[in-house]
Image (cartoon, rainbow, N blue to C red; front, side, top):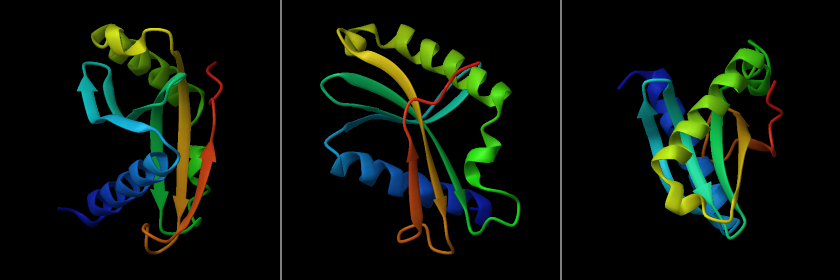
Length: 122
């Protein structure tokens, strides 16, 4: 596996653990459709959350959240709607939202983690 892929996988593992610790259930990882891929889908009693995970060793190329521009946010929303269409039973009575996790540091398992709740969709 390429180093970049390993870094991304480690970040997704960390994000999944983070959400589990908050009481969310992980419903899907790396879910794919024709529009693209969702890193994580998690849920609690009130929300189903599509999670974009951005992991960086440092900020030389900017903060991870800077990579989630208007085009990416619109694509995430299309992906969220596609996932919800395939999983209507899970969405029953829950709100669908998009969150972002930014992880910065040389080792994702102990690096700084930021959670952006309810990413605004253009």
